Structures are given as C-alpha cells and as structure tokens.
Length: 469
Image 1 (cartoon, rainbow, N blue to C red):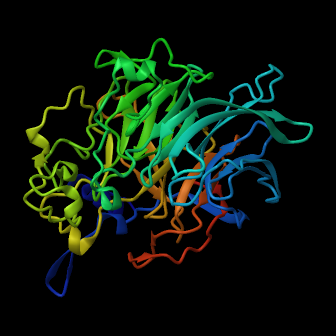
Image 2 (cartoon, rainbow, N blue to C red):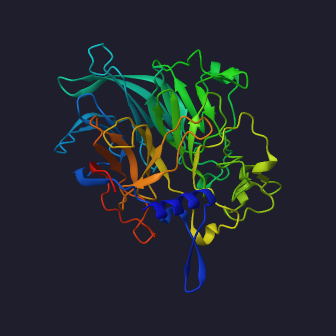
C-alpha cells in the first residue's frame, strides 16, 4: 500500500501518471487512480429511494436530518433501521434543473437544548416572479422544530432575492462558532456551456448603493456571512470599501463548507482541472474566473466570451477548447488579483501537456465536506472528509497546524459506483453516513464514466472495524 500511495502523491503533485504497456508510455486521467486507506469498514444501505438527498447532518435527536433537493422536503432518517419521517415539505421550492431545489440546511447549535432556539435554517430556490417568466432566486428560511409532533413549523424568511442561475448554484450552509450563518453561492455557470454569453460576476463586488437597496445581484461566486436574522454582521470584512454579506469572493461552484475550530474550509468545482480545497479568510479573493487553482499558467487560460468583439457572443458557438479570435483571452500570470488566496489542495493540477480532449477533465467533482472530530479511528482525528461525485470516493485529508500547508495529502475511502453528495460522522466516531445522488455520472471500476449508479438516492453507512496493517 505504501508504494501505491507514494505513486499517487507524486500524481497529485505532477498531475501525471504514466504506465508502460508493450513499450508504450501512457498518460492516465489522475482521477482513475485511487489509493485506498488501509483501515477496514463494513458497509450497508440504511435507506433508499430518496428524492435527491443533498445535505445530511446528525441531529441532537439521534436522527440523520436530510434535505431532499428534488423532493422539496426535510426528512429525518433513523440510522438504525432506515425508517423516516418528513419534518416539512416546502411547496414553494422551485426544482426543474440539476442545481436547484432544496439545498443547504443548518441546525441551530442549541436545537433541543431547552433554550427556546429550536431553529432549523434551510436554503432553497424559488420563483421570484410567479406569473411571468421564471425569475430563479434563492432564499434562506428559518423554521421552528416541534419535537412533540416531529415537524418544522412557523417559517420565517430571513434573506430573500439572492441570485440563482441554471448552473453552479452552490448552496451549502453551516453555522460558524461565532454564531453566524455561512452560505456558499456559485457563479451561476456564467461564461460556460449554455450560459457562455453571461458575464461572470465572481470578481465583481456590490456598491454601497446596491447594498442599501438590498440589491444582491452580485452575490455570485461568493461565500456569505449572515446574521441569524438575515442582516449584515457589523464585523464582516470591508471589501472594496463596502461592507455586505460577502465574506469571500472569486469562487466558481463552492459545494462544501466545514469549520475546524475557527478555520473555515471549502470545496469547489473547477472547470476542467483544479477542483479546489480552500481555507477561507475574510475578504479573501480566490481568483475565479481569472485564476483556476494556483496562479501557474497550467492548462487554463481565461476566455471571456461575453466580451467578444467585434463578433457578438450570441453569434458564436461555444467551444471550451478553441475560443474564436474575437473572444479575449488572458493567462493567469497576466493578471493581478487583489487579495488572492491560493487553494490549499487541488484535484488536480495538470501540466499544459495534459490532453484534456483525450483524457477527460482532471476533476473529482467535490461536494460536501465535514471534519472528523473523534479519536475512535486511530489517526483520523482532525481530518477533513470530502465527498466526490465523479470519483465515487470520500477523501480524507489530515489537518495540520502549518499555516502554509494546513491540509496534508489525501487518502481515498469507500470506493463504490455512486456519486457521493455529502457525509456526516456519528457521535461515536465509528460510523460514517454518506448520501448519494439519484442520477449523474461517476467513474466505474475500469475508470470509464458511467451513468449506471449502484445505490442512487440512498443513505450508506460505513462502520469502522479495525485498523489496517
């Protein structure tokens, strides 16, 4: 195992793995090589037939609390027998596409502690202009949990009108140790695929007038920090001279947020390379779309389709590999990004010689992240656990006290033919629960992409049995 792991570490550093077959040198997509951790686990299916499970968290009642993106409901699942109860169905949720619906959820830290704050916060998409064409928006809503009837009631909208597009929605939400809500917002897929003529606003910041008018239109490609009543915290960072809900910016599609003590870690989708793990700092700029991953000029050049001239963007056919001459292009080294913060880990940085057309995107499609807090599994304490949709594994990354390198090399676990959307650790530290997507692509055992999922829309349990040798 150690020799294989050394090989994978080299792969993640150089982003190239080669093998010799019949005297020919082959380059492989880095995501097809997975070094499994040595520990032993047994697995079982806890529950199935969930309508797009998206967020899973451990409730103080001993149940798994799950948002169903497509089902538009919060469901409580008994981890022992898989029985379930619906806490609320939210009819207002708008769900038609792949990145809308009922998304993030955060349980108040004092839920069921008798303090009068039995609150559950959810983030979901809705139609901001019913009766006309769909105006897709996101809101954050607070519910009160009633344990006697096991239902969420008394809805209060605390923040509405957040922009949401047809792609790259983000939507992960967590409570910080400071008592604030943190919410990730994607770049709406701007400058890419069907949205290629839409300007990307991940680098754009609101003016004071926009904030005063509650115009949140530039809250794209951002991580927000929100008071529990929806207001802007007084100690939020001043960015470009303006204080807003924005905590950090320059993000593409942040799908995971987790606190390790006072440190906020985030997972984020890259375009064709450089999925990122970031340590989020207040006011930090994470580079997108000007920089993908590190500022290294490797396998990425920003092509700004919306600025095409003299040919207008609408007259062009999108091609990620060959933008026409009218589309301005800018290398990473040619730009100065104010307050740029590089990622602490990428999946994967590949050289310019890497053939994306032939080998495919060098990405793992990261989703939810959680911190493993227990000593139950030897050597796991204070590790970051990141789910992967394309690779169908959970990556464990030990956290360090090194400010420059706070995340150590990843090890992969729980390889199956599924898309892992989120993960949670049971209080005993011996059981880990993963929710899976109902549809989409993942990597099969041969390394090929497939849409045949083994456990679609399920809750899987992985129980630790012993240490590896």
